[in-house]
Amino acid sequence: MNILVTGGAGFIGSHVVRLLVNKYPDYQIFNLDALTYAGNLENLKDIESKSNYTFLKANINSAKVINDLFENYKFDKVIHLAAESHVDRSISDPLVFVKTNVIGTMNLLDAALANWKNNFVGKLFYHISTDEVYGTLGETGLFTETTSYDPNSPYSASKASSDHFVRAYGETYGLPYIISNCSNNYGPNQFPEKLIPLFINNIVNNKSLPVYGDGNYTRDWLFVKDHAEAIDLLLHKGGIKETYNIGGFNEWKNIELVQSLCKIMDKKLNRIEGKSADLITYVKDRPGHDKRYAIDAGKINGELGWKPSVTFEEGLEKTIDWYLEHQTWLGNVTKGKYREYYNEQYK
Ligand code: NAD
Ligand code: DAU
Image (tube, rainbow, N blue to C red):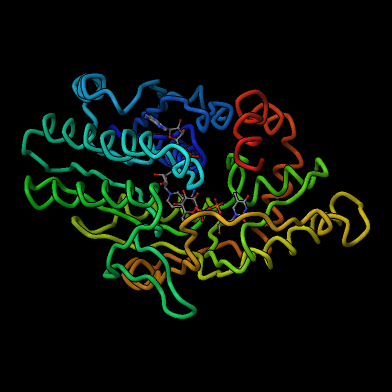
């Protein structure tokens, strides 16, 4: 079986690639990635010489390149993770999100359709999406698979659009697909623009911790390896033309999460308790900031038995330890362009 993973050099993609390469020596795993600022082959050093792994440097925005790769490598299944993924960047530069998340997805869909030539036996287009397509929740309730789409940021609008095209290709052309919509991931290898790695890095460097608005925004956090396990499960056992919500059953208000993080970091860095929390600074809110996300993962749990295996306490500890042990990785990704981004975003 030839499996194409797009975005495999990114955060979640690298965990998916590692899991598949190690678990399925009989599958050929192709990692297609453009290596944008968020892609990093350092993430996959431990498996890069395995015989069932191939890296393809390519951009999904080029229809011809993508089609040629489908012709050459005869992919049977696609797990599509490549995307622009950061909400704040989508606010300052929305068009690049349309190009990669919408047009790039279309190019993959067209290539799959053209190369599978209506013989869909053993074929699958598995599209990785987000809970942000559902918009925001109030104080109560959970997102289910039938919650209406109501995206509020350019990022979530582009992901919602790509979800709709995947579904439309299923309905119109019979393309076998699965979509999963997951909540906030955290763990090793996440680019330090997202809340948890950004704040770990800032604490280490005694820089302020910019909490947006009043900090009373809620997210549902899932350890990235549990997401990778869910993706593996759906790849093999998911229902065709089905969508699945994946979440951590683990809601935290941002400010409470940041306070816990600060406490653990004080211990790890042998600082007096409260030193890291002193870095907390309330800053201007994110425009269109969604108040609360929370996933009802009852479908994947009830039908396929998936549930998170890592508690938040364990996951946070593992994540902090990983960043503390990978200061060179952090140093490398926070040079140059990152500084420009940081100064512009938090000026
Ligand atoms: P990421 O930003 O860490 O990685 C994205 C990867 O895609 C990078 O390796 C990048 O180089 C690659 N890429 C970007 N544009 C490309 C292009 N035009 N052509 C080829 N490759 C390109 O993202 P992530 O956090 O790992 O998210 C992966 C997927 O999961 C995304 O589709 C995202 O919407 C979805 N998702 C993320 C989360 C989360 O909490 N991070 C939660 C739910 C869903
Ligand atoms: O819900 C899934 C989504 O989770 C994914 O689809 C996205 O790709 C991923 O980036 C993430 O989106 P969020 O916007 O929720 O994640 P982020 O880490 O950017 O922010 C988490 C919360 O923390 C959010 O309420 C905004 C807040 N925040 C974030 C940053 C970067 C701050 O208060 N300060 C910050 O500096």
